[in-house]
Image (cartoon, rainbow, N blue to C red; front, side):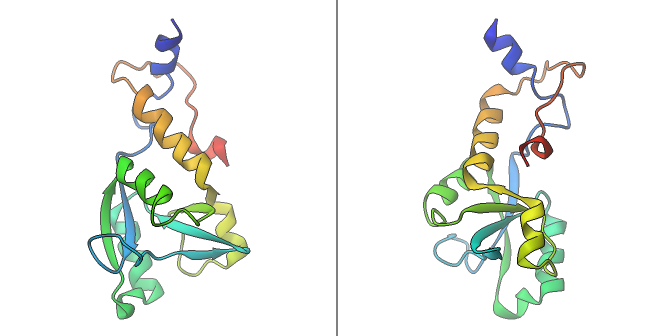
Length: 142
């Protein structure tokens, strides 16, 4: 029965995305990951859509420095956060390039919380989920 409650946690449209977009200098996502200042911590900007990431690059002038939008899966994003970006303390969700360090915190969650949200949802989503159940949305994690 516990498994049934777990699978009903995410109604369609409220579960975490399986695709994300990052800003990287190359396709391998090595050391060339764009990070932002978040009030004394580093935050990895993560975008829920390709358009949001492209807008960040263009509005922030990052294209001049060869930053490129790169699609990644939820699993790869977790690996990035525990690999090359293990020192990043927060994940900024769809930030604007004009946000100051203090305001980036408003659209960010801790790295651990973000990873937990992604990992839990990967195992707990079922297409049969009922829309009548409450969703544990990312906004509640803030």
